[in-house]
Image (cartoon, rainbow, N blue to C red; front, side):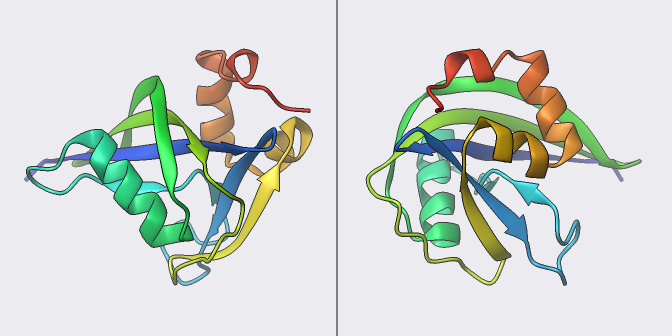
Length: 136
């Protein structure tokens, strides 16, 4: 049986930094750094899902600004994830992580490139995301 999952991720900006979160060690992909987000619940609009997921994972309130890019990846031979990635702005930088993540970092361009998972960095490069960000 094949499965297609639709998920959202946020490129959350605050004070010229991007929020990245480290997946919990016990979780699938544990230890890797990513942008916050998650699966869209049935009946949910993508932007509403993203606001909910970011709040659940980080405690942050965000404004969804615009879509950055869409991507697709195979996480298993019979499981495909469609990923909708949005630019977001946080109202503050006071992160309170859920159990899904072990750490967080408000990263500048250099820290982001050093820490983020290679497949995410490749997507950012392919879609020229760094040119569209304001990072010091």
